[in-house]
Length: 371
Image 1 (spheres, one colour):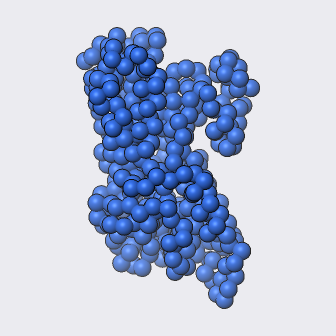
Image 2 (cartoon, rainbow, N blue to C red):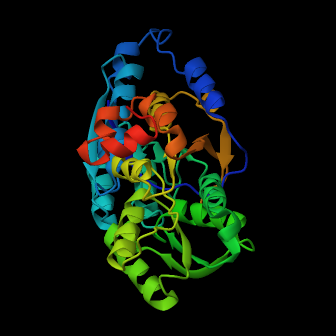
Image 3 (tube, rainbow, N blue to C red):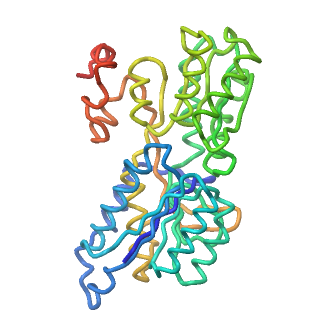
């Protein structure tokens, strides 16, 4: 079997979920030991189409793709085939990739959409061809069968709370800049909503941007414009929706001669972001455990390809703009700061201390006991 994954971002969720609940669900429902009845050899030889949205954010190639491939192999006892394509932030290219997957007669598609709206027609074509579609990480529009991601509004709340904590008594002494994600990504809307829920009324928002394509260079330009408009001495903090943009923001602050950097948030726990946190340049990131998200997508993909029900695998029901009652698995995020680098990304095996604490960051690592 071939698996195709296409990445999209999550919309609003209705029920909270714990990591333990996700783990318990996958453990209880994900065993392949009892799958040996009748035609198992044939049913395990499935094709899964995996379509991811871009390669500028490190997570997709470094984590999501290999994790999903590993889980598909696990749930099919090595007989499943994953067919992979990356759209490189091109919605039209991703639609063409879906067409190619249909032609190849994959059994199921996992799609992380570049543009949640633009993918809807292709999702319908896949469904019309009898191919179930799982929206991965972003809530794609169209007749999807299942969805797995993170609670995006909660992620925005985690970021907003962390920024307020970092500001402390200074929250009323200046303005913040909000650097949201791309409007083509429904997850960005959730992050933005959650952050505003926490920040509105507690701190003044001087400038706010929806950053085209999540690109760090666009965040850099936006931040330079905010500095020009507000004045570098007036900006007390920056809400950045992810780590890539945080890097562009921090570069703009440095280029403007801001020596005492204001707290900057992030998301995705990219290596560069973690290193900036260690060095004191970025205040926090949201660490999202990709393993349970990938495992949920893989398990649901295999089940749907084999014509099985997924009711026992899900922990949420969500609505997209086009589809109501989508069976879903949602995973919580964790605020990562200097204080818990070791207990998160190091202990989970995402990065080694050697990878984080290169020569440039060794002294900063030693200061926080990371050695």
